[in-house]
Every structure is written in C-alpha cells, then in structure tokens.
Amino acid sequence: MPTDDAILVLNCGSSSIKFAVFAPAQGAVPREPAWKGQVKGIGGAAPVFEESGCEPRALAPGAAGSERHDALACIRERVLDRLEGRGLAAVAHRVVHGGSRYFEPVRVESGVLADLRSYIPLAPLHQPFALEAIEVLLSARPDLPQVACFDTGFHHTLPRVEQMLPLDRAAYDRGLRRYGFHGLSYQYLATVLPERLGDAAHGRIVCAHLGSGASLCALQGLRSVATTMGFSALDGLMMGTRCGSLDPGAVLYLMEIEKLSLEDVAHVLYHESGLLGMSGVSADVSQLLSLEAETGEQGEHVREALALYVRRIVREIGSLAAALGGLDGLVFTAGVGEHAAPIRQRVCEGLAFLGVRLDGAANAAQAARISAPDSTVSVLVEPTNEEWVAASQAVAMLSA
Image 1: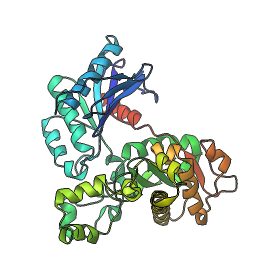
Image 2: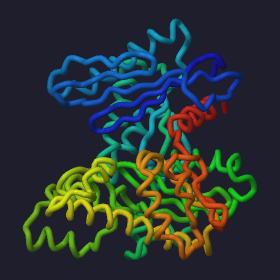
Image 3: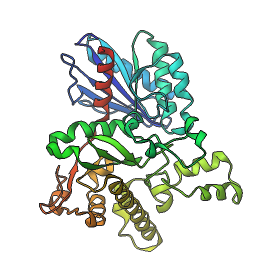
Image 4: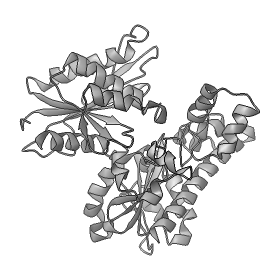
C-alpha cells in the first residue's frame, strides 16, 4: 500500500457509527488518529454528526430504512473532504464475530460477506450493522479494500479445554464453542502492558473491559488463556442491558411456562436485562451511581443492581485467577473501567483475598496506576484503543 495513504476505521453499532482516520508514516500507524468522530442517534428523530475539532451538527432524519446509508454517506463525504486529496488505502471494520473460520484480518469480498452473515445470530447487536456498512462501501467503491478485523480473533489462543462446551462431541465441530469477544481491546492491552509493567506484563494478568458490554480476559504471556464471554456476547458478566451468564433452565422456563416466543426471550436477554432490568431505571453506571443514595424502592433497586454487577465481576475475576494459578496484575479499561472510580474501588475491595490493595487517592484521581505500594497485584487503568488495533491490522495485511 502507498505509505502516505490514510486508513479509515469504522465501528458500527445499532444506533451509532464511530469512525477514526489514521495517517500511517513509513508503515507505522500512530496511536492517535488524525481525527475521529461519530454519527449518533441513527434511527431517531435527531441524528447528530460529531468530529474532533468541530462543533456537533444535526443531520436531517433520513427516510425509514435509509438512516444508516445516509450516515455512512455523510462520514465518507466528510472524510474525503478533510483528506484534501490524500488517498484512502482501506476501510477497516470492527467485526464482532469471525466464527470458527476467521481469526486473522481479512479483505471482505462477496464470499466472505456471506460467511460473516451466518454469524449474525451470535452477535445481533453488532454483526449486522458492520456487515451492512461493508456491503454499502463495497457497492460504492469496489476498488477500495474493506478489511474485517475480528473481536474473536485474539482468543484463538484459548486452550481447547477453554473452548469446549459441555454438549455432545459433535457440537464443537458444528461451531458450538466458546469464542470470546472484545478481542481488539485486549489486543491493545497486550501491546501496551509491557510498556507499563515491563517483564511483569508476561505474568498472570486479568483485563476487565467494562462498558455497556463487558467481559474479562485472562492473559498469560500476553496471550488469551481464558475469558468470560463464550459462544455469544450474552455470556459472562452482567452488563448494561444484557444478562450475562444465566441458568439455561431460566430460559426454558420463560418459554415453556411464561410462553415467551423465541424473539421475545432474545429481546429480554439482550435489551431488558442487566443493570437496566434490575434497576428499572438505567443501563448507565454513572447514572445509577448518582441514584444509589435515593430512598424508597427505586434506591433499593439501584443499590441491588450495582451490588450484583460488582459481585459478578469479583466472582469472575476469582475464577480467572484460579485458571491462571494466581494473579499478578489487574487492568481496567473501557467506559466504566476507565471512568467509574467507585466501581473499581468495590471490585478491588472484593479481591483483597488475592492481595489486591487499592490506593484510594490515586483511584479517585483517575491515575494510571491505582494499586497501593503494599499491593501484591499491580492494578492499572488503561484507556482502550480498538481503532488503532484495527488500523494497524489493516496496514499489516495490505503490506504483506
């Protein structure tokens, strides 16, 4: 690829499209983008276009069904305008699920696109929107490489025993296995941890990606050896609107006794559970923290939701520490992990039995290292950078 061409990274969700533009120099991708932005509120009455260095501006609502295409067209037009004649080498897409076939970044063409569509049921909140963006851009610019970068790819190093589900033997061959997610985020942490911890980064590390979606990953030798999300992005930790790990019997009960349809159950598990379902108020941790002192039933529900949220994180970190045979480091990242000091404090207090000791002042100040001097576990806060990982993977693939 021409060394002076830019890389556009797209991260498509159900109601927003985030983008970042990176300007590689001599084959190296700087960690900070040249600029970034997003279109949010897609499908709503007032979508908004935001980008670094500019005031947000409202977009005219599109016709029903065309909103995402309109948002992509807006981003493409603005990116080309700001490039001022500089070439665009590729568009890198965060694609949540690569299934049992795709572990490395891949240039997407019609056959690959068809394969990736088959994984939509495993990641319905993300997969269809990334694929729609790829399809639109393939149609508009068939000459411009569209590179899929997979959240599941980083977990390809999981030992077989961590991949297997306790079903019949043939289930694994049919693709029923644990895949793991948030891989671009964990790939970034695996890249920067040696800069933060030196040789200790190769030890027993648990990374906590806590956002609206949430998971944990156990690293040893900077490779994924266990993780909390499994076959789908519903597994593991309690999340903003997703349930996390749930007794399968509860799902059978909802369908058999309460007579919910398959579609109704999916909606409950993906959109009406987690913090939102338990609190009855919000999926947003910062908002719930501001409400937990309220009296009455609402305050009680908020406190219970946050207590279970923390409890599940502590329990799962304990299980990953068992898989690792101990714990040397704990890293918080993503929206909640990076910004919610009270959640970090409560999690660390629950992990005192592992030797975790928190520096309260450092935690409150959002410092990069928040463990106390007498802590046997290094506790860090590291902003994630999934877009940089995707851009770097695209450059490496196109340069090979």
